[in-house]
Image (cartoon, rainbow, N blue to C red; front, side):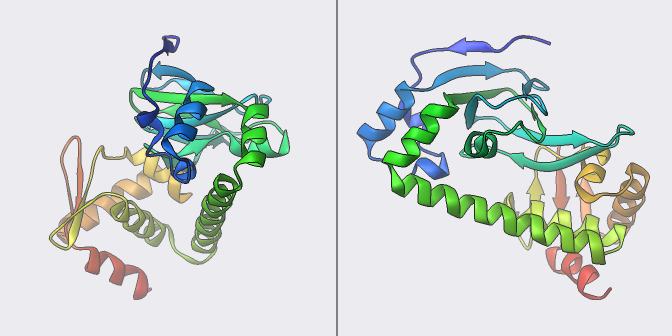
Length: 235
């Protein structure tokens, strides 16, 4: 694995898209950026290792990462995928407990990080950022609550449908559908929906046959969001 490339002289504008930092003025954001370390990571780099102590909070300026864990038998479970403007490591910084997941880059990424103690001190002196952080965390809890309900009440096929709809909301909308790029592997989609790769393969084939989705090597097209939604509602 290629070690991260330490990077310097990054403009504070690279952090302008980070949601929790949006209340900061240009001067405040520039000062915060000066407190950060910056590094570029190749795809498939472990930025955070599960069960290790937290010493930093991370902010994604470019690229995308996946937060995941593994069952005792090695089954992969994906908690979330995070992109530009999102952050990770904040929970361990707040409660001083080990990381609950691995965080692995999905593509080449530029990531800023700040010492956990410095981050906590910053929150105490910037209540607007603290409020924005709490709002973001509340949104993540709501999403997890929704997924728990789906895991408890939906069939494997419908969990796949629900995850595709979630992905559609976060990607470019086109003529009643959406383009998801880069696409997910069948194993990735299985790990996000608590099902198997074989179940994903069968269901995607059915959706293609019904002209609800289309795929190419790099992209997944949801052609009919309404039809995909109806599959869940009709169960």
